[in-house]
Every structure is written in structure tokens, then in C-alpha cells.
Image (cartoon, rainbow, N blue to C red; front, side, top):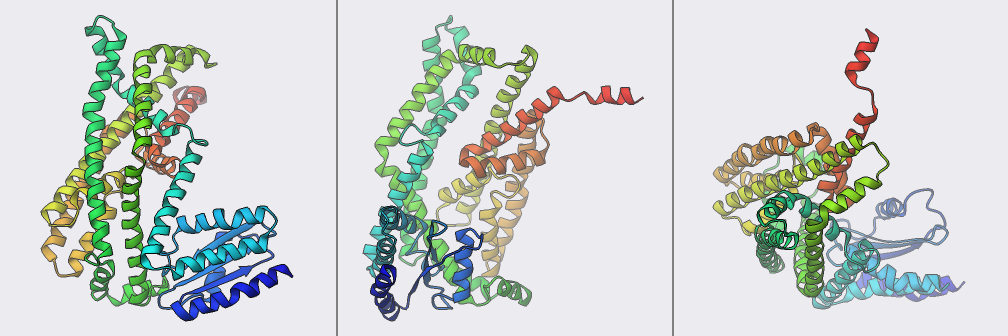
Length: 479
């Protein structure tokens, strides 16, 4: 009965919200999710009830499944810029979950509902302030989860090890020239690593942060309008494309415009927030960076001894250990050097053509293309492809043709020529294995997955070869 009493309290608030703002929020309690994940169940319920205005999809569903111990805030794309994933996560974890754990489910539901209403009634400045705070809290929470509760991020240890492997040949040469003084050789190697790897990355990151902030401000000021760009493209689409979009629930331009505007706002806000977070967490970044350099120094100096001790602890034949160690080092060097060479080349070429064509933020788009080029085959085309379509659809024919030919013949050729030579040749893995392992690694481990994925695949294949009978022997036995 207490739950019904609480529902009677916030129901008038929801009705007033819908009347005043034209935004609809529905609170639903379900006994059984019928075996569905709550994300899928909430999405189905949202669509079945038609929450929010149809043309702008500006509704939200707060669903509670107490028997399954699940909560979710499902948001229509028209409200996504105001009720982001980060904010809904903070609302659930801060306002709802503590009360539910204390045995006050009705109080938790009411607190969550009040938080949603407050955000939807807030002025743009207040709403943006809550979004920024939610992003910081969300990122801080997930950073603690990735580091195991507040320690040093695992990624720093991993990349310290990778840099030690990459610069080990240079360290050995310096060690021979410096009459085997390991501390000085390691320090000089570390200095060279800073000059040719770390400092250029920091300079590019500063330029990207600056351009991302400029683009975000232009989007907020309306100088960059993704909806207007979409309208220009929409007017040139053939009938069969319009029918296809209608089957995807994008049959009217208003629906597509709302989704694109929401996507553009969230993307630019994400980039700007990342830049803000980098600035606000400067001390933490400096400390973590110092730890990585400290680790790198000792891995360079003591790496051979550590490697020997690790190999000695592996319960395999000496021949097998040498083969697996050689494969591990070869694949790390090939994937890092090969993928970074491809990414840097494609990013530089993409940024260059964007600058030539007068596209806003060439450094920003070049860096994004460089990151996306870590995905074999499709990477950079995810950026230059849509821009090509926009040029062609808006009458900028020569720019569109130029970008299309340049993208396929220059940017794409880099991927088709360099990646097999630099990655596939050294790893001795087929191109499709490199592709699948890279995608799988990045899906599981994020950016570091473009190294971890191929390494795991290569070690699996090497281990398989060690313990599988040779093909020639099998053929001879059959004869």
C-alpha cells in the first residue's frame, strides 16, 4: 500500500511535467521481465506504449522490476541530450539504489522520479551543469573499476611493457656502446622514447583538445547544424532509399533530424568533456605518467633478467619456451609498429585532404581517422565516407569526387598495402585472423585490444602448432 501512496504523490508531478514541457515520463513497475534483459524489455515497452510525442520521441520510461532486482531509465532519442546515459546511471546509483538496499523501494522510486523531473524542468544552464557533474562522476567511477578500486591503471603497466619491448633493441645497442653501464643506457633509451613517442603524442592531444572545444562551441551556437546538413542530403535521396529509411523508423525527416542532432550534440559534448576531464585530472595524469616512465626504466634495465626468471618458471620444454617467447615479442612489435604506422599515415593523409577542402577541424578529424584506422578495412572511411556523400548531395561535386578518389586511392591504399606488410607478414597470420582478433581485442579491452587481440591469437596458433603433428608427417603416414 505504501508504494501506491507514493505513486499517488508523484503522478500529479508527471502530469504537470507533460502539460508544461510536452515531455512525458512514465514510471512502471513490472513483476516479471519474462526472461528478457531489462534493456530489451524496457525498449519493447517504450515502443509499445508510444511514450513521448511521436515526431520528436521526447519521452522517458523509468522501469522497476523488483523480483528481478533490476532498474532502468529508458530514454527516447529526443531527450538523449538532456538525459544522457551518464546522468541516468548517476540517478540510479545515487538516488535509487541506496534507498532500495535500505528496504525503501517506494522511496527509491520517488527519489529517482524527482531527479528525472528536476532535470527536465531545469534551465539549459542548470541541466548542462548536472550533465557535466554526472560525466565526471561516471568517468571517475568507471576509472576506479578499471584500476581495481583506485590503484594504477592496468593500461599503464601494459604500455610500459610494450614500450620496453619496442625499445629493447635500442637499449642493447646503447649498452654495448656505453661499456655495459645499465643505468645510463636505460636513462638514454627512456629519453629517446620521450622525444620520439611521448612528446609528439602530447602535442597532438593538445591540438585535438583545442579543436574539439571549438567544434563543440560552434555546435552549441548553431554554427554547425547536423540537422541542416541532413536536410540537404534528404532532399536528394531517391525513392528506394526513402522506403528503406521508413522501414528503419526513419520515414520522416523530423525523425532523422532529431536523431542526427542528438548524435551530434552528444558526440561534441563527449569530446569537450574528455578535454575538460584531461584538464581537471592533470595531477592524476602526471602521477600515472610518471609511474609508467619509472616502470619503463626498470623494465629496460632489468628486462633480460626478469624475462629469464619468467621463462624459467614456465613448465615447458626449453625449445617450446623459446618459440612462444619469440612469437610473443614478434607479434607485439609487429602489431604496435604496423598499426601505429598505418594509423599515423592514414590520419595525416585524412587531415591533409580535409584541410585542403576547407573542412572545419582537420587535426581533430585526422586524429579520429587515425584511431578508427585501427579497425582494419573500414576504419578511416567511417569519417571521409559520410563527408563525401554530403559534398555530392549538396552540389559540391568536385569536392565530393576528389575526396572519394583520394579516400579510396590514397587513404585506402595505405591500409591495403602497409597493414599486410607490417602486421600480417611478421606475425605470419592470415589477414582475416588479424582483423577478427583486432576487433575482438578492442571490444574486450578497449584501445589496448589492438595489441592484446592479435597477441592472444598468435600465441594460440603457436601453441596449437607446437602440440599438433606436422602435416608432412601425417601425409607420409597415410602413404
